[in-house]
Length: 133
Image (cartoon, rainbow, N blue to C red; front, side):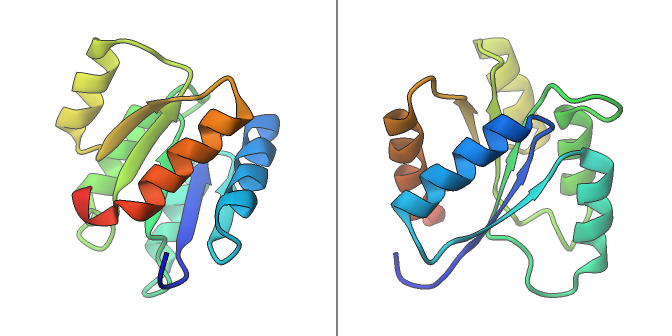
């Protein structure tokens, strides 16, 4: 893990965010994590930035007001943001969700792991394989 990276997690579940940040800190102390609890705010923040954009966006699907799929569509429409790999990070399971989000531009789909060790393993995988996304 060469240069410091930034991850944005968009998730309305504070516990999931806390566990995600803790796992990330154990995997890579140099990676910075920003958490935003809704899609509307995340889009506002991202659209205001000209630089210092995240290297990855982890996006939950099941959120109130604007869901993850709607957010993904907006991210991929924006020329400044569309290059950022979006990893769907959700409790949703199934090939239909995977295929639909892939078609919308998601780089990867991860069902939220039930074990902390699995979450750390997934984060290691993502951080080491940016070029594949």
